[in-house]
Structures are given as structure tokens and as C-alpha cells.
Length: 540
Image 1: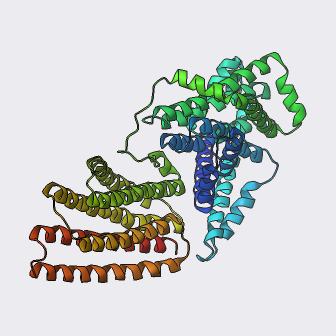
Image 2: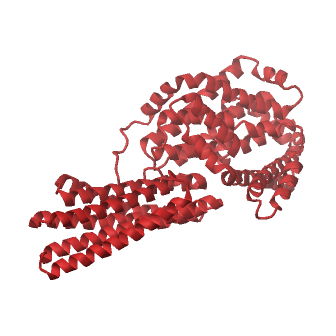
Image 3: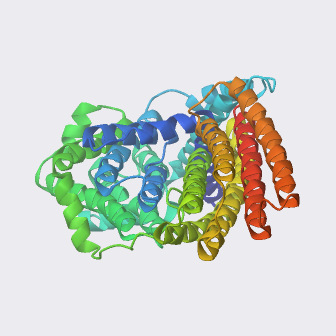
């Protein structure tokens, strides 16, 4: 084993990990929104949740990445602990795809590298094919790395010192710890299992020892999720604990089976002659059997996690991002989608404040006014928090659709915040009217009611366009026409009111409140039109 062999080993490992990174990023751009919709369909049905975990992990080739994603969703209250348990179990099955491919006697390195090169060379107009080309290229780099590691480890079978050291480590528990340690250091079970496949294939390690290392590797992959749960809420920490419990129980069970029964001999019968496939089959067997045993006991796993991670959790607070978690920045399509939900939440609060402020103007309600004041503080917080996260997401590698979405959200967030400000102004006018006992004529009240109704309709249509409830871009034309009507009505009412002031039919205080209402209602209409335009641009 020379210095060049060592350098080749680490170089191959680097290529393997880089290939997985390229593969994951390509899949996120090519299919990220589909993966997001798949997770959104997860229900209380544990089997469906498990299948979602299998599908997502099989695509992104990393159970650790899936589990970190799940921890982020749980922390953002998007998934319950019950739903997370199923996804986590499925992720363990999904991670068996890479070792299985590595065991096939096919030169995937050459096939994927050539195909990826061809697809990446296509013109810019073939964006989807180029994104798929990145996925294929990542697979090619992954296999090149594995071939490099295999060549670098070949001399180990003839190195007496290594063989002696290996033979001295025969205790199953020590082998389990070695497997867990290697995977924890690499932060990739696929990479560590790939190395194990090479060791077995090159005759460096017998299968009877390798299976215990493999069992430990399943525990080592939990380290990434445990690190990711730092700073999360109690439920997210429990989700990471479920992941650890699943693999510890599975490892304990299979370690006992392998010690008591001729487990290695059974695996050799299932995959005779192909040593890499024997490791892949063991990995598949471990995860499918463990899932089959523990999925019906998912409730017990939840309860055990609650005992190991005690606490009542954090009290619910409006002053936080409810749908976004910083861990989602590792998966840009999910991050963009969840920020979109945060902006939707902000829009709902702004709309509620507007209708509440108008109600308070008609008839003062101190309790409703206090709620509007609190909501205004929430809007100010969300404006700053969402904008900061939009800056983070904008710097990520986004597909064209998400790039347009994030760009439009910058504008929409500001418009919703301004709607909240003008609603606050209306509330202040309502309080002044209530405190001073200001009376308006039935005509003035009718005028303000008509204008308020037009603005509310405008805001409601803009919100529906933004949410995607109205997909027809032609809906923007009525919004623009309504905005013109609001401006014309505001100008007419302002002119008429000035005439009333001149003829002394209205007091100065009444006039000030009336004109403030006109100004704020008209400005809200402007922001509603801006929101509708931003929504239309995001869909182009």
C-alpha cells in the first residue's frame, strides 16, 4: 500500500461524495417541486408516508438528506411526529438503491459520464434535458469515484500488516462501532457502504465480518440528523430520535441473528459469486425487515422518543416563521415553496387587518382593535424575517420557475406590509372618530362603504391570483380596470367633499378623517394591483 494508493483512495472518495452532491442538486432542479408535492400528500397513513420516504430517498440518494429535510418540516410544523416516523422508515429503504447499483457488473461510470456529457451539451432551450444531464453526470462521477477507490484498495489484500490487524478485530460489537464511526465521519451511508463493498469484493474483509460493519453503518447515518436537530423544537428532536431508535433496534436485532444463526451463509446463497451484491442484499434485507417489524409499532417508537426527549415543547408564537426552517436551504425548491406559504400567511393577516379596521370604523370594537394592533406587529416581524430568508434563497441554485417566484415575493412582501400599514391608519381614524364622537352623514358613510367594498374585492382577487386559485392571466385585466375605477371614484369623492367643506356642510375634523380614509383605501387598492401583477409575472 503506497502513498499513491492512499491518495487515490481519498481522491476516489472525494469523487464519490461530489458525484452524490451533483446528483442531488440536479434532481432538486429537475424534480424538486414534484418531490415537494409528494411530501405534501403525506397523511396520517403511515404506509403512504413510508412509501413517500422510499421514493424521495431513492431519487436524491441520501437517507440523511431526507431525514434532515423531515426534521426541518417537523420543526416548521408541516409534518407531525406520526407522519415523520413513516417517512424516516421509508428513507432507510430508499437508501439501498445506491449499493444495489454498485453491485451490478455494469460499467455505469462510462455509460453515465458519456450520457451526461451529451445531455449537458444540448442548447439552453432544452433546460429539462440539461437538468437531467446533471443528474446522470453526477451518477457517472459517483461510479468513477467508486472505481478509483476499488483500484486503490486492491493492494490491501496482499498487505500482511492490514490482514493481521483486521483478523484481530473479530468482536461483532467492535465491528458495529467501526461501521458507525466511519459513516458518522463521512456523513454518507452510501459512501461508507460503497467502501465496504470494495473491501469485501477485493477479498480484504470476509462477509462474516463485513455484515456487522454494515449494521453499524446504519447507526452512523443517524449522526447527520442528530446534528441537524440542534436548535429545533422538541418535536423535531423526537423525530431525529425516532431515526436513531429505528436503526439501533434493527442493528441489535440483526447482530443477535448474525451471531446465533448462519446469516452470512444465507446471504451467500442468495447472491452467489457477487460479493458486492451480497453486501447490497444484506442492506436491503436489514431495512425492509426492520421496517416491516417496526412500522406497526410506530406509535410505540413515538412514545419512546417522547420519554427520551422529555418536555412540553415551545409555546406557539406568531412571531416566528411557521412554514420555513433554515434546514430547508439545503433543498432550494422546498425552501422557495415554504417561503411562498409564509407570504400567503402574511397576506391572510393583512387582509384580516383591513376588513377588521373597516369594521372598527363603522362601529368601534376595542377587542378587535387590540387584535389588529397585535397583527400589525406580526406583519412587521414577518416582513423582516421573510425578506432576510428570501435573500438567502435567492443566492441558491434555483430553477427558472422558482427564480421568478422568489423575485416576485420580494415585491409582494412589501405590498402586504404596506396594506397592513394603511389598515393601521384606518384603525387610527376609527379610534379618533370613536373618541371624539364624530358623526358622518348617511351619504358620506355610503360613499366610504362603496369604496371599501371595491377595494376589498380588488384585494380578494389579487390574493386569489397570488395563491394560484385563478390561473387565467386574463384576470389581470379586470384588476387593472377596477384599480382605474377606484382611482376615479376616489378623485370624485375627494372633489365632492372639498365642495362640502367650502359650503360649510362638513366640519374640519370630519373632513380630515374622511379624506384620510379616502387616501388609505385608494393606496390599498394600488398595492392590491401590484400584488396581482407580481403574481402574473411569477407564472410567466
